[in-house]
Length: 326
Image (cartoon, rainbow, N blue to C red):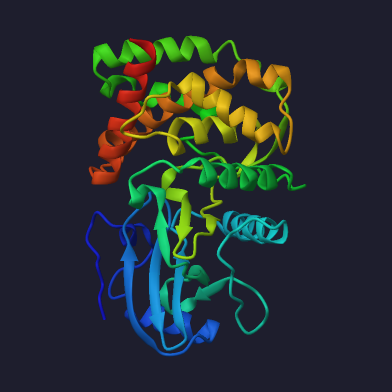
């Protein structure tokens, strides 16, 4: 069996040390998916530890929750996934253990907990290294509408990368940002302060429609992944992230302003935005670019995640700010 584990991988986030092989074996028994043939840690992401598991019954993904998550956090996350699936959002199906629940707790491994879902054969747009085409984008926006229409207000969870927390992120990272880049971030901060956050329409928001969390399967279906930071936010946060990240392309000829207008137009075909939302969407998306940039500084200089993924976010944010504000 393979175990692609080192100090830079998500496996280091668990309240557990040693081989993961027996843990994966017990998890497979609990979910009744047959004998394990192979498994490997998926290296992308900053939160939990995702493991691809291959058994005689097929391929699965085990999400082992990182040690910082409380039982309440885990219950919140699993309920959020279940509500999304019930609402018709394309999310990998969750498997159940024998008692009908979806959470496995391993008392032999410090009580670490996990959920299991079917592995979708395909690639995220991060792995594809491109933005969705027009047909794919419309499908993704339709999925965003389905998410935003879910009648669910989960307990609030703090997400340091979320746009409403831009001041907190700025205070944490400003000392690590180069002076020429700091001036650009400060411009965004000034614009963000004018957004009437409290009066904008709020709803259930995934909050992280990035290239890394939208997958295209081999059969062409679009899947939305990772509801770990879903919250009750201004509705335009969904479109701001889509415009700032998902619609970004290395060969961009479209400005962020044009992207926000296109996203707003296509979203409104399913669920009309208000004039106020349209007015502030660009500034909100610009704040999203700044959060990508500052979030990468947080990971690299504060959390010690000096990885290829961190460099991607750093470059994306810097390029976006310079393109829009210089």
